[in-house]
Amino acid sequence: MPIDAKRYRLGRLGRVTDLTVAVRPAAEAELPAIVESLEQRLYFTDRLARQRLGRGELLVAWLDGTAVGDVYLRLEGADEDLADLRDAPLLSHLEVLPPHRKQGIGSLLMRCAEAMAWRRGYDRVALGVTEDNTDAIRLYLSRGYALWRPDPIETYREIFREDGTVDAVPDEPCLVYVKRRPVAFIR
Ligand SMILES: CC(C)(COP(=O)(O)OP(=O)(O)OC[C@H]1O[C@@H](n2cnc3c(N)ncnc32)[C@H](O)[C@@H]1OP(=O)(O)O)[C@@H](O)C(=O)NCCC(=O)NCCS
Image 1: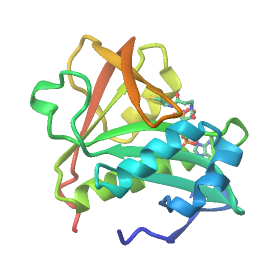
Image 2: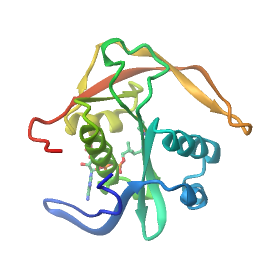
Image 3: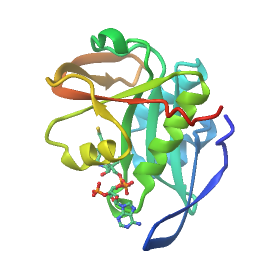
Protein backbone atom coordinates (compact mmCIF):
# COMPACT_ATOMS: atom_id res chain seq x y z
CA MET A 1 0.00 0.00 0.00
CA PRO A 2 1.42 3.39 -0.97
CA ILE A 3 0.73 5.06 2.39
CA ASP A 4 3.50 2.92 3.84
CA ALA A 5 6.10 5.03 5.62
CA LYS A 6 4.49 8.27 4.50
CA ARG A 7 4.91 10.99 7.11
CA TYR A 8 2.28 13.53 7.93
CA ARG A 9 2.65 16.88 9.55
CA LEU A 10 -0.29 17.38 11.87
CA GLY A 11 -1.85 20.76 12.19
CA ARG A 12 -5.12 22.58 11.85
CA LEU A 13 -5.84 26.16 10.93
CA GLY A 14 -4.81 28.20 13.93
CA ARG A 15 -3.76 25.10 15.86
CA VAL A 16 -0.52 24.07 14.28
CA THR A 17 1.43 21.48 16.23
CA ASP A 18 4.99 20.28 15.76
CA LEU A 19 4.00 16.61 16.03
CA THR A 20 5.22 14.38 13.24
CA VAL A 21 3.35 11.12 13.21
CA ALA A 22 3.88 8.23 10.82
CA VAL A 23 0.95 5.94 10.05
CA ARG A 24 1.72 2.68 8.30
CA PRO A 25 0.50 -0.91 8.07
CA ALA A 26 1.97 -2.90 10.95
CA ALA A 27 4.81 -5.31 10.22
CA GLU A 28 4.94 -8.63 12.08
CA ALA A 29 8.33 -7.72 13.55
CA GLU A 30 6.76 -4.64 15.14
CA LEU A 31 4.50 -6.67 17.43
CA PRO A 32 6.71 -6.25 20.55
CA ALA A 33 6.92 -2.47 20.04
CA ILE A 34 3.17 -2.21 19.42
CA VAL A 35 2.34 -4.22 22.54
CA GLU A 36 4.84 -2.32 24.66
CA SER A 37 2.69 0.80 24.50
CA LEU A 38 -0.73 -0.34 23.29
CA GLU A 39 -0.75 -3.68 25.19
CA GLN A 40 -3.51 -6.17 24.07
CA ARG A 41 -0.96 -8.74 22.87
CA LEU A 42 -3.54 -11.37 21.91
CA TYR A 43 -5.61 -8.85 19.96
CA PHE A 44 -2.65 -7.58 17.92
CA THR A 45 -1.31 -11.10 17.37
CA ASP A 46 -4.68 -12.08 15.92
CA ARG A 47 -4.90 -8.99 13.70
CA LEU A 48 -1.39 -9.48 12.32
CA ALA A 49 -2.28 -13.09 11.51
CA ARG A 50 -5.44 -11.95 9.70
CA GLN A 51 -3.48 -9.27 7.87
CA ARG A 52 -1.07 -11.96 6.66
CA LEU A 53 -4.05 -13.84 5.20
CA GLY A 54 -5.41 -10.72 3.48
CA ARG A 55 -8.39 -10.47 5.78
CA GLY A 56 -7.64 -6.98 7.07
CA GLU A 57 -5.12 -4.19 7.48
CA LEU A 58 -3.73 -3.08 10.82
CA LEU A 59 -2.59 0.53 10.77
CA VAL A 60 -0.44 1.91 13.57
CA ALA A 61 0.42 5.55 14.36
CA TRP A 62 4.02 6.04 15.50
CA LEU A 63 5.39 9.04 17.33
CA ASP A 64 9.14 9.02 17.88
CA GLY A 65 9.25 5.22 17.68
CA THR A 66 6.34 4.70 20.08
CA ALA A 67 3.03 3.23 18.92
CA VAL A 68 0.42 5.76 20.06
CA GLY A 69 -2.69 4.59 18.21
CA ASP A 70 -4.13 2.09 15.81
CA VAL A 71 -7.10 1.19 13.67
CA TYR A 72 -8.01 -2.08 11.98
CA LEU A 73 -9.68 -2.22 8.58
CA ARG A 74 -11.62 -5.45 8.58
CA LEU A 75 -12.06 -6.81 5.07
CA GLU A 76 -13.78 -10.08 5.94
CA GLY A 77 -17.45 -10.17 6.85
CA ALA A 78 -18.57 -8.87 10.22
CA ASP A 79 -19.97 -11.09 12.97
CA GLU A 80 -23.02 -8.84 12.95
CA ASP A 81 -25.92 -8.85 10.51
CA LEU A 82 -25.19 -5.82 8.37
CA ALA A 83 -27.59 -6.53 5.48
CA ASP A 84 -26.65 -4.31 2.51
CA LEU A 85 -23.42 -3.30 4.25
CA ARG A 86 -22.26 -6.91 4.24
CA ASP A 87 -19.47 -6.26 1.72
CA ALA A 88 -18.26 -2.96 3.11
CA PRO A 89 -14.96 -3.00 5.04
CA LEU A 90 -15.30 -2.20 8.72
CA LEU A 91 -13.15 0.36 10.41
CA SER A 92 -12.66 -1.01 13.90
CA HIS A 93 -10.62 -0.75 17.10
CA LEU A 94 -9.78 2.92 16.54
CA GLU A 95 -7.82 4.08 19.56
CA VAL A 96 -5.28 6.72 20.52
CA LEU A 97 -3.44 6.64 23.83
CA PRO A 98 -5.00 9.22 26.20
CA PRO A 99 -1.99 11.60 26.42
CA HIS A 100 -1.95 11.89 22.63
CA ARG A 101 -5.64 12.54 22.01
CA LYS A 102 -7.10 15.75 20.56
CA GLN A 103 -4.06 16.30 18.35
CA GLY A 104 -5.49 14.92 15.12
CA ILE A 105 -4.02 11.40 15.37
CA GLY A 106 -7.42 9.68 15.43
CA SER A 107 -8.48 11.61 12.34
CA LEU A 108 -5.23 10.74 10.62
CA LEU A 109 -5.66 7.02 11.34
CA MET A 110 -9.19 7.19 9.93
CA ARG A 111 -8.07 9.07 6.84
CA CYS A 112 -5.40 6.44 6.14
CA ALA A 113 -7.79 3.51 6.69
CA GLU A 114 -10.42 5.09 4.45
CA ALA A 115 -7.85 5.77 1.71
CA MET A 116 -6.81 2.15 1.93
CA ALA A 117 -10.42 1.03 1.41
CA TRP A 118 -10.96 3.38 -1.54
CA ARG A 119 -7.72 2.21 -3.17
CA ARG A 120 -8.90 -1.36 -2.84
CA GLY A 121 -11.98 -0.39 -4.84
CA TYR A 122 -14.57 -0.22 -2.06
CA ASP A 123 -17.08 2.60 -2.26
CA ARG A 124 -18.21 2.53 1.39
CA VAL A 125 -16.73 1.90 4.80
CA ALA A 126 -18.73 1.22 7.96
CA LEU A 127 -18.09 1.31 11.69
CA GLY A 128 -19.92 0.64 14.92
CA VAL A 129 -19.96 2.85 18.01
CA THR A 130 -21.89 2.78 21.26
CA GLU A 131 -24.46 5.55 21.61
CA ASP A 132 -22.75 7.05 24.65
CA ASN A 133 -19.37 7.51 22.90
CA THR A 134 -20.11 11.09 21.96
CA ASP A 135 -16.45 12.06 21.39
CA ALA A 136 -16.06 9.37 18.77
CA ILE A 137 -19.44 10.09 17.14
CA ARG A 138 -18.53 13.78 16.79
CA LEU A 139 -15.31 12.74 15.09
CA TYR A 140 -17.16 10.43 12.67
CA LEU A 141 -19.73 13.08 11.77
CA SER A 142 -16.99 15.62 11.14
CA ARG A 143 -15.33 13.11 8.80
CA GLY A 144 -18.45 12.66 6.68
CA TYR A 145 -19.95 9.54 8.25
CA ALA A 146 -23.74 9.24 8.32
CA LEU A 147 -25.96 7.09 10.48
CA TRP A 148 -26.87 3.90 8.62
CA ARG A 149 -30.03 3.08 10.56
CA PRO A 150 -31.61 4.93 13.48
CA ASP A 151 -31.53 1.99 15.87
CA PRO A 152 -28.46 0.29 17.36
CA ILE A 153 -27.70 -3.24 16.23
CA GLU A 154 -26.75 -6.26 18.31
CA THR A 155 -22.99 -6.71 18.36
CA TYR A 156 -20.38 -9.25 19.41
CA ARG A 157 -17.10 -8.82 21.24
CA GLU A 158 -14.18 -11.07 20.44
CA ILE A 159 -12.43 -13.00 23.22
CA PHE A 160 -8.87 -13.85 22.21
CA ARG A 161 -7.31 -16.98 23.68
CA GLU A 162 -3.66 -17.97 24.11
CA ASP A 163 -4.13 -20.92 21.72
CA GLY A 164 -5.08 -18.49 18.93
CA THR A 165 -8.79 -19.26 18.94
CA VAL A 166 -11.33 -16.45 19.10
CA ASP A 167 -14.84 -16.59 20.53
CA ALA A 168 -17.54 -14.02 19.83
CA VAL A 169 -19.77 -13.14 22.78
CA PRO A 170 -22.72 -10.69 22.87
CA ASP A 171 -21.68 -7.12 23.55
CA GLU A 172 -23.28 -3.69 23.88
CA PRO A 173 -25.57 -2.58 21.02
CA CYS A 174 -23.91 -0.20 18.58
CA LEU A 175 -24.97 2.46 16.14
CA VAL A 176 -23.57 1.89 12.67
CA TYR A 177 -22.15 4.77 10.64
CA VAL A 178 -21.25 4.69 6.96
CA LYS A 179 -19.03 6.82 4.79
CA ARG A 180 -19.12 6.83 0.99
CA ARG A 181 -16.03 7.19 -1.14
CA PRO A 182 -15.64 10.87 -2.06
CA VAL A 183 -16.34 11.47 -5.74
CA ALA A 184 -13.03 13.30 -5.99
CA PHE A 185 -10.98 10.34 -4.73
CA ILE A 186 -8.48 9.22 -7.34
CA ARG A 187 -6.88 5.83 -6.96
C1 LIG B 1 -12.00 8.41 19.54
C2 LIG B 1 -10.48 8.63 19.55
C3 LIG B 1 -9.80 7.53 18.72
C4 LIG B 1 -10.18 10.00 18.89
O1 LIG B 1 -8.78 10.13 18.81
P1 LIG B 1 -8.09 11.59 18.76
O2 LIG B 1 -6.68 11.39 18.37
O3 LIG B 1 -8.38 12.34 19.99
O4 LIG B 1 -8.91 12.25 17.55
P2 LIG B 1 -8.62 13.69 16.89
O5 LIG B 1 -7.56 14.41 17.64
O6 LIG B 1 -8.43 13.49 15.44
O7 LIG B 1 -10.01 14.43 17.09
C5 LIG B 1 -10.56 14.58 18.38
C6 LIG B 1 -10.88 16.06 18.64
O8 LIG B 1 -9.69 16.81 18.77
C7 LIG B 1 -9.74 17.95 17.89
N1 LIG B 1 -8.37 18.25 17.44
C8 LIG B 1 -7.68 17.63 16.47
N2 LIG B 1 -6.46 18.20 16.34
C9 LIG B 1 -6.39 19.19 17.27
C10 LIG B 1 -5.39 20.12 17.65
N3 LIG B 1 -4.20 20.18 17.03
N4 LIG B 1 -5.65 20.94 18.67
C11 LIG B 1 -6.83 20.92 19.31
N5 LIG B 1 -7.85 20.05 19.00
C12 LIG B 1 -7.61 19.21 17.99
C13 LIG B 1 -10.64 17.46 16.77
O9 LIG B 1 -11.21 18.55 16.08
C14 LIG B 1 -11.67 16.70 17.54
O10 LIG B 1 -12.54 17.65 18.13
P3 LIG B 1 -14.00 17.28 18.67
O11 LIG B 1 -13.76 16.57 19.99
O12 LIG B 1 -14.66 18.58 18.83
O13 LIG B 1 -14.62 16.38 17.64
C15 LIG B 1 -9.92 8.66 21.00
O14 LIG B 1 -10.69 9.56 21.77
C16 LIG B 1 -9.93 7.30 21.69
O15 LIG B 1 -8.98 6.51 21.58
N6 LIG B 1 -11.00 6.99 22.42
C17 LIG B 1 -11.11 5.72 23.16
C18 LIG B 1 -11.38 4.57 22.20
C19 LIG B 1 -12.64 4.79 21.41
O16 LIG B 1 -13.66 5.22 21.94
N7 LIG B 1 -12.57 4.48 20.09
C20 LIG B 1 -13.71 4.58 19.21
C21 LIG B 1 -14.49 3.31 19.28
S1 LIG B 1 -15.90 3.35 18.19
